[in-house]
Every structure is written in structure tokens, then in C-alpha cells.
Image (cartoon, rainbow, N blue to C red; front, side, top):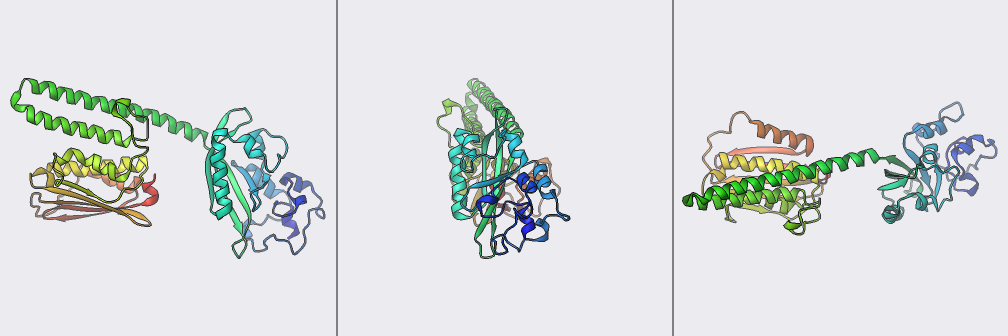
Length: 379
């Protein structure tokens, strides 16, 4: 038991809260602990220090790319590995209550502190993203995570955490966001140009004006669906306020609006709203668009009396979405082979959404059931 105190700052005594490098220089007797110490003697062999005694554990913690730290049950930090000091440029152990306020970006401090207090109060795993001051003076994004070490009765003995630099990932996401915004802008321009061509062409053909007006409304609806997918990005001020993030129900309604042709009964979307991440929204939009396109070409929406109904519900583990066509052309057998669009949606379902998809080819139309895990829906 006493050997482990030489390597791990796990002893709830003031004289044991020094840095690991200092432990390695301590005399064994000075770093010993009583046999009735609160240190758990039920640790698995995987976390015991390697034999023979030495500084293996210290060197391991210092070699880890992450910034490693630990804290007492009350949240006071009592250890930082070498990478933490190299990153922050602090040359000595800071005050246990003060380092984070000094190195976390002021705009991120309150949120990080709130998340940490919540974890301390509930015992839940800690996770937060915030900017940490680099020794160069620049602010760098990091992902902080911590897990509690518990006694057999569940009492938290200590928290162990890491800070992983993610600045490169954040910058890459920023560049992708700019590209996505530019692409969305160009798509809007394409919709606007097509709509203008339709309007101008109908001026010289009065008999085509009703058709042109209906087509124009469908183009506008497609443009609104595209804008909805980018609702969490700054929008065109001329389009009015945008929602903070695309919800599932309004997303489905926006995607199917072009196909309703003004009849609320032709396309029916039912279910409660649920938050959905941008990646999941994009993948789901591709799938719904492909289903709707096929319904217009060959399925229920290819005939005047055809109907499409989308039902969705969320339980503890997944979203279940059912696409059901009725009133379409009679199908004696399911179609053979699959085109590019179908293959693409299958890849999106499998790889991006990790969804379970079943297709039931009924004579009156396709019935597709999709189950998407909630963690993928939030992505």
C-alpha cells in the first residue's frame, strides 16, 4: 500500500498533495501511509505500478499527449502532469483553487465551472469544451473529461481527468462551416435563377402560367427546405428570423412541402418534435428526398389519389420513422436492382446514421421503417 503513495497523489492528507515528480524524489518513509488509509486496496492489477519500483508511472503520465489532472471529491485539484505545465507555461504548482480561473477563457469559464459543479454534485462524468490559455498567450480549444474513482459503496474518492487539445479540429470545423455556408448560398442562387427562368418563360405563354406558378412554388419550397438544414448558421436577413437549430418535425414538414401540391391530405407528417443534429439532419434529408423523388416517379405521388404518410416516435434508445405510401400504382412485385439514389441512401443509413432499415413492398405502395439510435440522431 505504501508503495503506491509514492506514485499516485491519492492520499487525502495535506502533505500528500504534491506533484508526482516530487513524490518520486521523496524518501519512502516520508511518503508512506498508514494501513488504515482510505486508499483502495481493491485496485485492479492493470492500474498498479510496474515492478520493480521506479518512476514508470510518473513517466507514463508525463508521456501521455493529454493534459492529465486529478481532484479531490470536493473538486480541489491536486495534481497536474508535465504536459499541463508545458501547455500553460506555469512553472510551479498553482494554488488548488486558482489555476482554472486564470487559464480558462473568460467567455468559457462560467460554463466550465457550472459543468464541473454539476458533476461534483451528481457524480456524473464530466465533459466540457473550452479555450485554455497556451504558454504563447494564444487561446486553444480543449476537450476536458473526468471520471470519478469510487469506493465499493459508491462514495467518490477522487476524480481523474484529461484535457485533450482540439484546436485543429475546431479550426477544420470552422473551415467546413464556411464552405457549407458558401455552398448553401450558391444553392439558393441556383433556385433563384431557375425560378426566374420559369417566371420569364411563362410571360410569353399564358396557357402555361398555372403550371409555371405551381412549379415556382415547388422550387421555393425546396429552397426553404435547404435553408432549414442550415438554420443553425447565419441566414439571409431578408428571409426573417431563423430557428436556433433544425427540429425533426419542422425538418420533415419542410422537406415534404414541395410534394403536397397544396393538399394537406396528400402528404401527412405526424409525430412530436425532437432535436436533431446537423449531420443527422443532412443524412435524413437525403433519404427523405430520395424516397419522395421515387414516389413522384413510380410510387404514390405519381398519381392524383396517391398519399404519403410519415410517422415518427422517439423512445429511450432510438427514433422510429415509418414512411408509408398508399393509393399508388399497383405493384405486383418489388423492383429489381437499385439505382444510384437508392444505393446512396443505403450507405447514408448504414454508415452515417447507423440505422436499421426494413422495406415492405406492398401492392399499394412502399412501407419503410427506419430506427436511428438517439446518439446518431444528435450528431
